[in-house]
Image 1 (cartoon, one colour):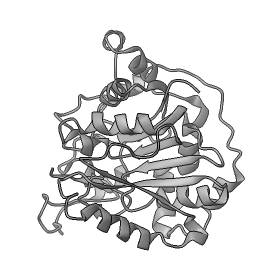
Image 2: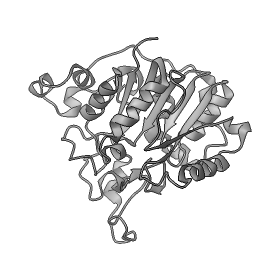
Image 3: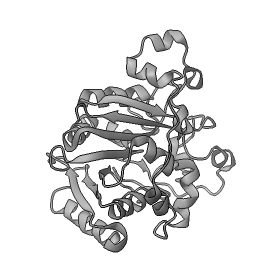
Image 4: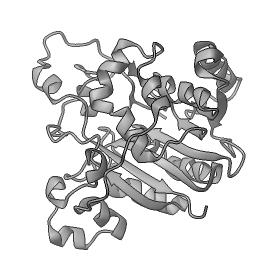
Amino acid sequence: MTVKSRTDGVASRQVLTRLGLGCLTAAMLGLGTAATAQTSPELRAAQTHKISAPQVVDDPALVEVLKGPQRPAGDVARDGARHPLESLTFWGLRPGATVLEMFPGAGYWVRILAPYAAKTHGHYITTVSALTGDEKDGAIQARVDKFKARWADASVYGEIGYAPLGKATTQLAPPGSVDLILTARNIHNLLWEKGEVDRTLALAFAALKPGGVLAVEEHRADPRAQIGDARDGYVATSTVIAAAKKAGFVFDGASEINANPKDTKDHPFGVWTLPPERQSAPDGKAPDPAFDRAKYDAIGESDRMTLRFRKPGG
């Protein structure tokens, strides 16, 4: 599978409200009453103005981790676009939780979630993936070894768990053992391989405890339609909701934490034209020094959906 992922501050080719006011509005998405009437109840909930009680951020451990020296300046500079405190609060992160991150990329969330788990006596697990068929011949184990070396300081990151994820994977963690699973900005990758979204979300569903949360952040195509299988990186909210429901999840909320109304979603190199990747030439070509980056840098990071799904029970 040819993969391309906009990751955490570096170019990569791997598979990888503000709080309380809530959810997407039909006006913001540019969707009229007639259009929303034809959508699922979950999508209508994400597209209508639902006011919920303000969420109070009262987690000193998370605040401390976000200020920690393990986070490089580049990560901290992106917090204005990624909103880690608000996002994790919306998703329901709690002290002592077992958290599994799918496709960790360059480590933006690793440097938050692993130290947080260590500090609060929880457990952080990450997938280590080889979804291109190269999981044979020890490729996944080599990736696990590389990841372990990178995050080896147990005094900061605790004892990280590793969940190899390849074509033959049958479970990510013991069934019903995980409190929260995060998939951030990588569902578009899974769409490029037939059946991969369904398979991956089914694995996530099995790993979560009853009542556990699937947390989703993804580049948002709305209000325009998703283009094909989202090779430009922008996914329709309805695509994500439908896939989560198919896996057995119940839609549990949408937030505008990571919205960016300046994102016109019509960029020459898809979402990767925008920061942080800032692509300026076709794949495989050297960066174009003559490419005018000004308007794309002014947009900032992409417009993203922030969704919460729950496994029934609990």
